[in-house]
Amino acid sequence: MSAEPLIEIEAASKQYVTTGGLVDALPPTDARIAAGQVTALVGVSGSGKSTLLRLVAGHETPSSGRVIVAGHDLAMLSGRRRDRFRRETVTYVSQRAADNLFPQLSLAEHLRAGASLRPFEVLGIASRMTARPGELSGGELARASFAVALAQGAPLVVVDEPTAELDRTTAGDVLAAMDDAASQGQTFVVATHDPAVIALAGNVLDLTRQRPETTRAHVREWVPGEVALRLHDVTKSYSGATALAGVSLEVRERELALVFGRSGSGKSTLLMVAGGWIDPDHGTVEPAATTWRELAYVPQRFGLVPELTVEENVDLPAQLVGAAPVAGLFARLAIEELRGRYPAQISIGQQQRVAIARALRLESRIVLVDEPTSHQDPVHAELVWAALGAAAEAGAACLVATHELDARHRADRWWPIEDGRLRDMSWDQAPGL
Image 1: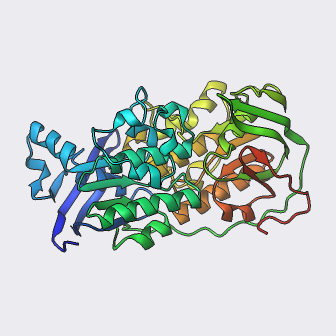
Image 2: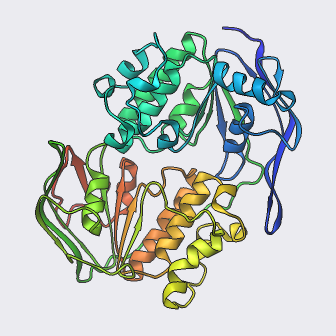
Image 3: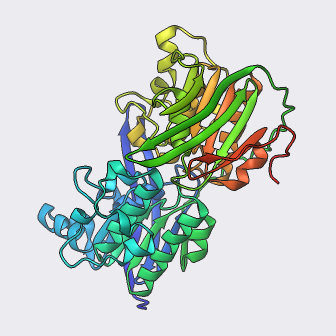
């Protein structure tokens, strides 16, 4: 392994112009990153991790300072030389797995002639080489985008939150593939909140300048209300593959309920059926239909309107019906200072909290949330869980899908799901056992 720096970052900073003025996306930063190792970029949400990755990958140029990769001062490269650098020297893996792949191509069609299939084998998706991205589950999509990146064979791989939406087992496969590729000489720069990724890294660069205040968990006294959502014997299949098999559950007013399981276990499908966006093949969902005011939904891909500011995104549902403000909602999710920015000008973790704030804006009777803390650092994850708990305490029936097993202690009730089958939990079973 070479000790020579592959990457030299000299007082590099990045600013963006917004309607409210200049935003410091990355304060001046210095770093030296050696070839052939894994470097973890850590820091609270919004500290500049994703911005630094884009600078290193040549997707953007610094507002000041220099970023030198493999001897190239990236700000000095012409358009043609920059394209060649991005084609031959670096592979960039976005947080949004779907953005890394062409929807019309199968996984095999993404690869150059003679590309190694080893990453697909290590990640357990070699059997899906003929599938297109739209035919993959969320977990499969994340693994596929990472496998395609590794198969390109670029000396430098820049990765944004590779395990954010993966269960521990699948994340372990990703880490094994990364470790294997690093042992063969590839260099990785990884933005992450995951302690397992940090433990794997030979170098850690912390971008945190100011840490947010920690929030103590609020212990709620659960007083269940009427049943707000009920699924009975629900089944759903896609192209012969079973996504849900005989699922039955009910969620009551003032309840925070969890469904947890591995990637591809059926969690997202369950939420989509519960919300009425997908019809079950068999079984019933009550209520069979709701107005958009009565049911709020936060998908893994957020669905923010890019042309609207953070404040306009959060308030859009309320403006449509003339609803009164919800006191403290922006502060509760630490997005107060982001009001005037647009989604593209904030981090993925911040976007996720904006989407959650929008879902809570109308104080709907039913709230469905898919992987609410997948892009959050520990401090901001506590804020998210506190906000969901407050919504339940105020009367909402909250159903959350997550792969985070440790989240069970936050719930009034929880159910594990595996291969589309839900294990029934008794009313008096204590969460967290």
